[in-house]
Length: 407
Ligand code: CTP
Image 1: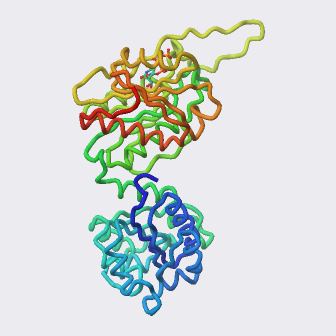
Image 2 (image 1 turned 90 degrees about the vertical axis):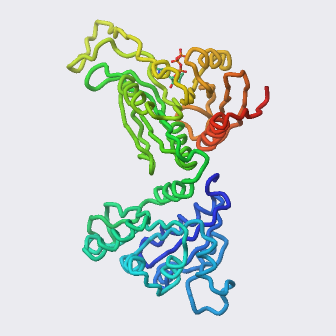
Image 3 (image 1 turned 60 degrees about the vertical axis):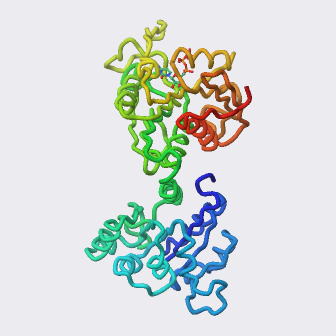
């Protein structure tokens, strides 16, 4: 959705066993409302019938250059002109060689030669073929032309061996597609620092003071900012989420480490979005050895405040500061106080008592408040969509324009 909506993407599919993942890719791109045309080599059509791609994308794939019934007269030229992006997944050693040498022998290499759209190549091949100097030299040639190579990954290969050659995961490929299509977005040239997750304040070597934040809201913000062209630094507390594509990630544990990473990142940043649920207190000291259980005694752990990161970043001309307020009571009143206390441009408030939104869920229901007292209430929606709305407001602030939500 959003930066994939109505975008004209051509998917080139070549003859590897990983073709089945390309079907999932085609399906997900179509669900995200891209206009997806599929082109296939004759070998690819032996692994998966072209009609499968027709089924998931609603469009007939092109795979036979000599088919007089093709609805486009010169399909490769027409598709090459329309394409905003050509992604070849899976890409075999053969097609990689054809691309490097400029050979145009079937629909995929023909279209690649004819298009001026950006190209993403996702190799899938046996590790011996991947490591061969011929393949490596061809991949270097493609990189030197600015072509984005994604993968291959380590793992179990069709041969039963473990090695580097697996097609990247579909979500990883989609991350790269979003990044490449977003390069000229409305945050191009801007540096955005985003924080995500909770923090773990160590009590002893195995225990900590923490919270159940999953990091999903912050990761969604980092990805959405990337998809609008920003250079993104994501400072994340402990989170099980994988590193997002094309985002610089700094993984930290404690509030003090998060503070250091945020202050370093903000030196030349345009935007700071503090989505992290930072612990407010940390143990006064971390005990060196694991604390033993003593049946008859109560245990007290003295806590001292953590650094208030947003407050420490301070106010700097040219830096837009956005905070979050996770509240269980007096949502708007508390959020308004935080805007003032932390010198924020915007605050995103959510009620953490709602069972369908907020901590560790995929959706969020938030209210965005600005310094002028304007309030924008958003309905329940996926966190990526919430992120997109927050960035809309930030883009308006950058442009010096006042957006017009309800007063
Ligand atoms: N925050 C921060 N440093 C902290 C605590 C919070 O920078 N040590 C940031 C959060 O990332 C969030 C905003 O401040 O963007 C508000 O966080 P919240 O926990 O709601 O507010 P607190 O200031 O901690 O106040 P309280 O917990 O009393 O509501």
